[in-house]
Amino acid sequence: MAIRTGSLNGDVPARPVDEFIDVLLERPRLRIERIVSTGQTTPEGEWYDQDRDEWVLLTSGAARLRIEGETDERELVAGEWILLPAHCRHRVTWTQSEPPTVWLAVHF
Image (cartoon, rainbow, N blue to C red; front, side, top):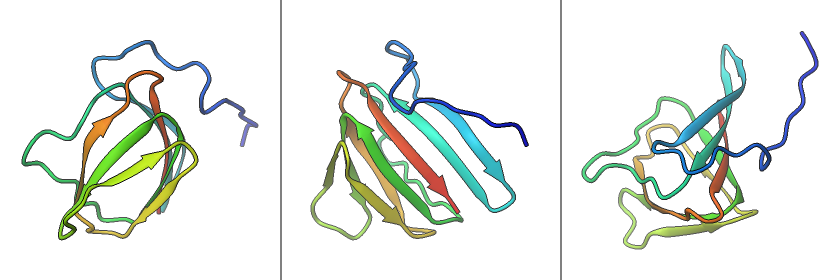
C-alpha cells in the first residue's frame, strides 16, 4: 500500500452545488470519507438509514441533525462528533456555508 497524506480542511472546493465527498480510505468493512457541505441538507421527507455504524466528526463549520424519535435537533460545531448506530434514521437539516462545513465520516 502506498503512503498517502492530506488535509481535512485544506483544498476545500469553492461552493460546490452538491456536497463534495472524498473517499479517503475504503476496505471491506471500513470507509472513511471527507464530506464538504456548503448549505446542503437532506431533502425534505428523506432519511439516511444505513446498514453500518457511522462515526462523524465536524472539523470545521457547523451542522444540525434530526434523529428520528428525538424532539430536538442536535447541533454540531467544529470539534464535536457523534456515533450513529446502524439503522439510526437521521437527516441533515442545516449546514453552515461560510466557512464550509467539513465532516470526517467513518463507516464501519
